[in-house]
Length: 295
Ligand SMILES: Nc1ncnc2c1ncn2[C@@H]1O[C@H](COP(=O)(O)OP(=O)(O)O)[C@@H](O)[C@H]1O
Ligand SMILES: [Mg+2]
Image (cartoon, rainbow, N blue to C red):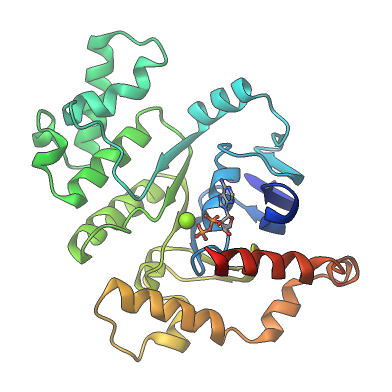
C-alpha cells in the first residue's frame, strides 16, 4: 500500500478567463522511504504538487490518499492536525523568526501543541544535536550561514517527528557548500526511514534521490527510479558533459532538458483516456500562456 497516492489530481487557480491549470490530472504513488526529487521549469506545477501533498492546498479534482486515508476533502482543521503530526515542511526562503534564537525557533511548533517550556527546549535541543547544530542553539538567524539557517529550519521541521519531509527548493538560495550540507542532512533523515520529497533545479542533486519526477505544464512527463550517488539518467544523458557553474546555468540546463525530453515520453505518460478527454486542453493552455506573456 503506497504511503501517498494521487489519482487524476487537478488544481485550478482563479476564475473564468484568468484560470490557470496548475496540475493537470496528475497520478502519483509514493512508497514509504522514497527520496523523490521533483524537477521541471518554473511554473510547471512543482510547488502546487508539494502543497497538495503536504495538505496546504486541496485538489480541485481527483483523489488523494495519505496512509490509505482519503484526505482531499478534509476540513481545514483536520487537515492542519494531520499535517502537524505527519509532515515537516522546508521552504526555499528561510522562515526562521529573526528575533528568536535557533533553539526558540526550533521549539516553536511544540508551542502549538501546548508542551511546556522546559520539555520544549529539551526536545528542540535534542533535534539540534541530531542535525549537528548543538553549538548554535543561542545564535540568532543573522549570525548563521545560509546552510546553517536551512539546517535549523530542517530541525524545526523534524521537531514534531513527522514521517514525511516536504522541501520546496531547500537549496535554492544556497551556495554549493550550503547545498551539500542540507542535502547530506536530508540523506541522513532519509536513512532513518523517512520519506522525502524535494524540488530542485540542480541536476547534480538528483544524486541524493531514489526517484526523479519531471514536470511540465502541470503534468508528470517523466518518472525515473535512480541510484543514490548517481545523477538521474535523463539528466546525465543531456547535461553531464557540459560544465555548469552558476544557478542560472543550472536553470538553463533544466529548460534544455525539458525541451530535450522526447515527445514519446509525454505520450507514454498520457493514458488513452487522457487523449480522449483532452479536447478543451489546448484552449485552456493557450489562455494560460497568453496570461503569462501579458504579465
Ligand atoms: N495561488 C495561486 N494563484 C494563481 N495561480 C497560481 C497560484 N499558485 C500557482 N499558480 C500558477 O500555477 C502554475 C504552477 O505554479 P507553481 O506550482 O508555483 O509552479 P513551480 O513551483 O513549478 O514554479 C503557474 O502558472 C502559477 O502561476
Ligand atoms: Mg515553485
